[in-house]
Image (tube, rainbow, N blue to C red; front, top):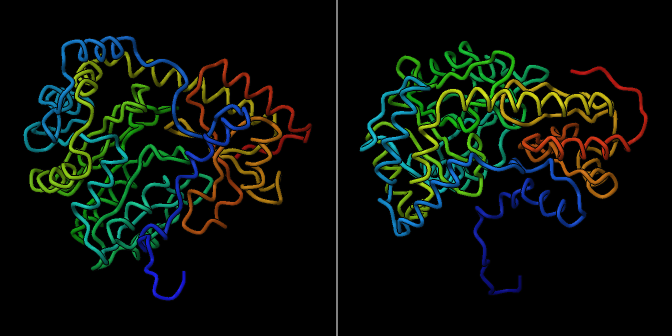
Length: 397
């Protein structure tokens, strides 16, 4: 930059990179690799949702919906939340429909966090959380989750709370590790939120994808947390419609009022016909969710079996549809070199673990596999991964 020239980009934008996950999808396409990186299904959504979306378009539901969400959709969300989570929410004053859960988190941050506030983030973390905090002018305060069971240290978490803390982000089931926060962990978090008068932003997008008897507990249902929890969810993962970009936020009326104002000036509203189709999604019977979890359990077991054959240690997920693998003994060059090798030489795309840590060095021993794919895709990925070599399998973590 020559003398007298002004910097043309913001200091906020300089503090983070573009999405590594989405970049892996682009590299997969470029090299013809099987995409086990980005978290989207390569199979069809329920036929009922396709029909509902087509019917909504044919019925000319193609103009703006109410900014904070189609009335019928909000009412359907309220009924489903009452059934599944045991939460009573008013669709008129406590629900905001957004353009996916990604916009939801950004709107929540901008509506509730001031510059200089601290936001506690468990790491490894989904890559959006850090940039969202930076865009809101907040300071991320990272608290580690420790393998092999990805639990936090209670003393470390307690030290993270202080008078500058505005919020804590809790993602359960967790991306990228597959951890499901249990009742004791959530109770501790809730107690600290009450003690320090802190908000909790919960990302519960994988709420129905659970394994081995693990259950989902909504933080908002714990004592004293209904008024201070902002719950984020959406259609993407549960209903296999990641491209629809329909999310929603549950919050108390005062918080919802602020969130709705920010959301209005971010995106105006989510796609109207897809919101109307979302009514059908919210009305699917309990059997749908049971079968969903069963199908994902089969996919998980197929990928874990492949990793055992290949000899990559892994952390068996309790929920969500990712496997965090430990490559420390496989690639001395770390996650970036291993990822490049997989994409360019083996033909399988994964996400480097460094993208999930504030200090990239901490993630060099990990990569993330996604198994929200058809059996045929997972089988094809297995055949390619088996070409990595005949190293003796290491113990599974």
